[in-house]
Image (cartoon, rainbow, N blue to C red; front, side, top):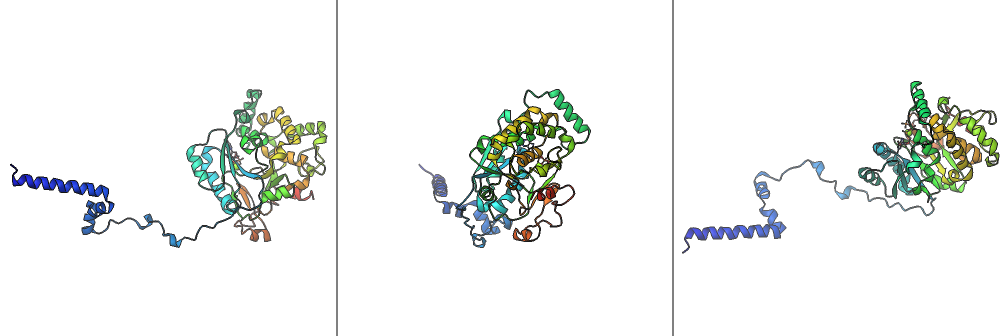
Length: 379
Ligand SMILES: Nc1nc2c(ncn2[C@@H]2O[C@H](COP(=O)(O)OP(=O)(O)OP(=O)(O)O)[C@@H](O)[C@H]2O)c(=O)[nH]1
Ligand SMILES: [Mg+2]
């Protein structure tokens, strides 16, 4: 026989079970009867800082639908970076997107001798709608070749460090790679034009036109914004090697070339002028062509990338000056650009047209260490 107490327990059990079943099966019932809701009845709703609520959509301007231009060049950005360069390259890339590529949607190729990490890739791809590819540089395109005499190479590095030469002990592989291997990378094979971008640079102006199409239509092969003198101690025998190469390959020189930019005496000596290669807009097929390919191989055989510290800037610049016509080398006067410690700030109408934010009085163009006046004199 059931006592009245047993009836009470049974009914309570049924009620509690029903409550749990309803809480799971009916969200509204669950919310209404939750303990926190019931306490809120007495204490008021639980508060949180207002910023945790997203700004309502009504305040947003609808995202502009920028259509891809109907005519584009076959071109890409190229960034050679380490995983640790992420903050610096994001800063550069965000500016490229905002000032230019939001409208043009050119792809990006990232290169590294080590695999890029997943967080690196995630942060980079979040910055753009354009395609992004990440490439691993083949071992033989990056590391010091076995035929280099390491005793001689390390002695040269130590010597430069001792003498306070900037980057004297480092960057050999990078300079050699940029001189002769970047344009051979598999991910770049499908492209004709490139824009090299480094970490932590600044782009001061809107670039509302397509510099790649300009290169293509005007048959230009190399574009720069800053030019200057190379440190002599990094290239003691470079010009000798260049002269020897020219003597046996004079047929490769372009008629109407820019020898006047790199030599003040018709080729006897190098005046050390070079285009600053941390910014480049160029034609990959020019580097891939017969003249530059032979030129780079010859220089590489001399070992100067390791026994001295030949930089990709003088090597590219000498190559462009010798194997292209002078009118194929373009000064991007309207692209405001800074790589520490120098900047090119567009002047006058170009400054206002590009809505540039650099101080026009801070402009390297005709400073004593700039080579722009030598470029001007070519024409
Ligand atoms: N993957 C990779 N990239 C490198 C390495 N060293 C340099 N780089 C890249 O090569 C380019 C030139 O290197 P920087 O360190 O900027 O050399 P720099 O412009 O002479 O010197 P900074 O004044 O430091 O900018 C940059 O895009 C670097 O990110 C390296 O060891 N591995
Ligand atoms: Mg740099």
